[in-house]
Length: 376
Ligand code: GDP
Ligand code: MN
Image (tube, rainbow, N blue to C red; front, side):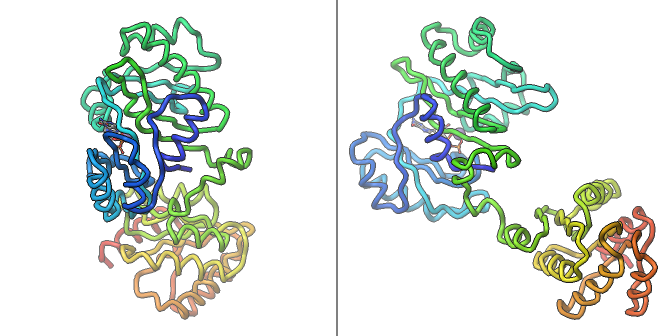
């Protein structure tokens, strides 16, 4: 789960990490009023997407009038597919150097990896590609050893006095990540000011969805815009659905089989439009619900139905498909692979309606890729 910058700021501030002062507002006039006391103001779009600085979502203002104008302009933006509905106004900090400080749950290193560079700011992604060695990494496994942490931080921060602040902040960030089951915490910029203070000017936190049940206060931060309307609807219908960018719709029973199906589509050169697990139940209505959600995406050029019947019965799925065909006026090719429980009955039902089912999964995947490309 992702949260907005202001929510991440509230959390890191609660963990005693120094941040510049900020207020959340929802219109331009409020932005002006909330920031009256500050000389220079940073006006920031609150969206669940990064890279705001590069697209005009973060702007400096030097007067109340400018704050109002810039807030109004930012509220017109759409960033990473999200409209801007909330604005954060911040007391702008003078910056001497922009560091990046992050902690990430690192599966490949089997620990929490601490990342640091003194070349932080809006170009951090490019830096990670062009000069990855400039980002220092240290993998933590349990308690942080003070001496090791200090010598690590010295790679980016030479002054011992300033490093003391970074040591405390790193420890606090580490506690936050562990205690709240975050998978990523990032401060970028982690800014050094001319008077020698290290301040978080931006914060990003991702949480492990599977651990949210033990953190009701984090679950309460959930922003409904994070899951698309289709994903939210699928959830209420007992389907697990994730939108992807390709043109092949998929309806599969079982999450493991669904992932294997996506892998195979990719392997054979196709691109899936979604992940969709109809689960183990045998209710034909589920096939109708699933197909209606898949069909809403007009990028979808063909649909692969991959059913390995166990608890799910192939005849129920076949009936569901016929129901869906009647109700939904499906105009794109459906490729069906049907094996397992009541496979014969299922095939017979489809055959009667003039539909064929493929037995072999590779064949079915190749067929749907061809169909999506308009080759029959
Ligand atoms: P992001 O682009 O979405 O990561 O947004 P950030 O909050 O990181 O802001 C982008 C850039 O705006 C930063 O890298 C800074 O250069 C600048 N910025 C953000 N806050 C401040 C501030 O308080 N003072 C100054 N001078 N610049 C800021
Ligand atoms: Mn940032």
